[in-house]
Length: 347
Image (tube, rainbow, N blue to C red; front, side):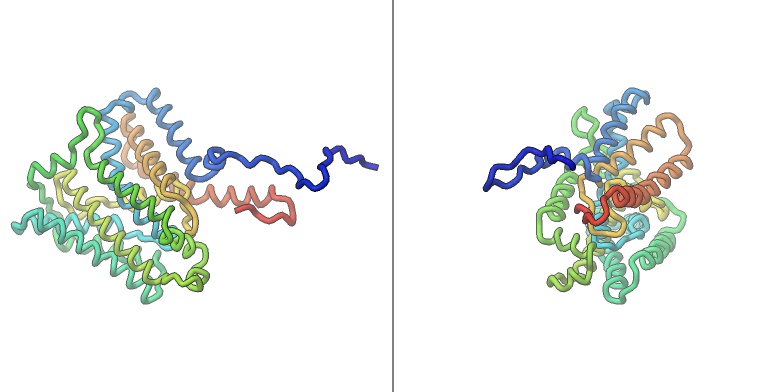
């Protein structure tokens, strides 16, 4: 007969519980923690292995490359958390750039052009939101359509021309850095937007409602959440922010073109999924998204420094996007196989 060797529990006392893992260990096991560790490891390796990677000059270029990606990823993360998607963001950037160039060519001041471009972004986002929330169409199909539509309109507005005589004060500001640090000035307002978005997503009832919609739209409705209205305004905000990205893109490169930011949507979505946000909605955090954007930008930057062709950079982005989608599914299946039968899954 087997003998119970477990220590006896004094009468009247509850059995001792195993100590819970620390919050730091729990964080390392999340998508945010994993991608942050990968980012730190890559930065350390690249700093020693790639000549010039750790210089302040290259740091400035790297941050300039990820500014628009992070900017657009902020509202798009909220959209994806609700279970929707917007593939038209890069085309919104291109159309905004084309309109900006055409209005500047027509003689309007930038102080008037920029607000008009933001209004344009709101309209473009509202079109997506209306088709998705009012007509009940899938956001994937809708935004694939508007991706082509908005890019086509950009070529209608500006054609193959390039407008490149913007005021030097504006273009210089878009590239200026803070002292000798190499950190672009534009990073400061971007950090403010990151903090605001993080607070909204993780510390307000609005953020909790977005996760609720991503997990179960019907349950969110029964809880009193206006799902259609919330998603509509998310698409509007995404359009406005993408238009702001178009303005900055134009000023940074000093050129308004209809093909500006072509393919940028893949980099933004790859950064979001690398950061641990589920493509099906309902999970993920903003810290991981920022780390994912920095990792993607760092990988591309390091490859550029070793003279890897641009086509290979696109392949790397595609591979990282596939990895970001496949890895959570594989991990979920592994956890399901290791879980004892009859034992519920831990959240």
